[in-house]
Image (tube, rainbow over all chains, first blue to last red; front, side, top):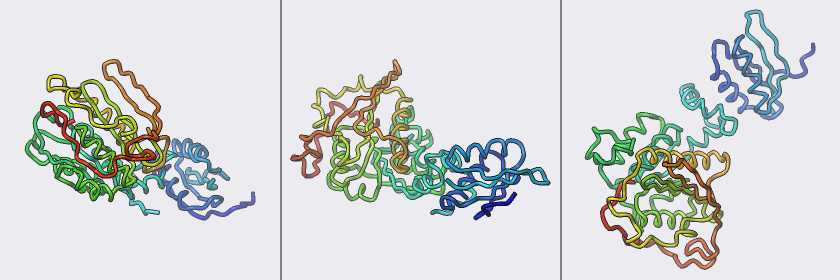
Length: 80
Length: 271
């Protein structure tokens, strides 16, 4: 699959539990303009099960979500 | 935008997580200046919650010292603080909760001569005063200087509050034209108050201050909220700005601040 957009910012939330991972995600998104993309790394389990949904509820878009070799997840978020 | 430290992000995480508040809203709170008039029953919870919320600059006005009879409801003061100036006692607790804010103390009585110089540095005023003359003084000064404020009052089992945005919404004098006559003010035997209602009302006032600063939701403007703790009935009465209001109407008759007579039959204090 060709990535249409590359990330404008990266936030590694490995080892960061809920809800602080969402807090860091909001901080990073606040720095971006609408349409820019944040690359987010989230742990497997509650983080990947919760954060993308919360991000969508706040009006942003999930462009891509895939599991990495270490079990963590890479999520591309486009700011709404 | 403010660069938050990781400690601030943790401290304010439950605000930042709110979609309506977020990073931007918390930055507004840290940049805001709120004045609390009265470090008593209403001012105590307001002081604690506004400090906890990270209001960057909080002023607190009170001329009194802590008395043992205050401790039943004025939760910012502790038994060890008896005889200490209330503003110092309150400041100590506020900074203990949140060392990242600035607390300015004014150990004085507000009067027609000093109020405007004090309130003009603030974005919002929480009126937690215990007497009618000062409530009118706060209203009049805030209307003249265009500073939004929260009115609050409690007695026995009842509380009432309204938020005033001068020029836009009804002010206290739109409905309560002047302080009540002395015989309408309760005597000592009628002046009890259920301690927890100070927390109920002062906390509503703190929430109004936070809403005003973050521009979230609808304020209690043009609305008098009252409750009775015996029945736990809450009631909202819709108000309208009055054209003939003596201070915010079309032809104001109150054009300068005056110190109203304290219409009390005994020394009712510390609400």
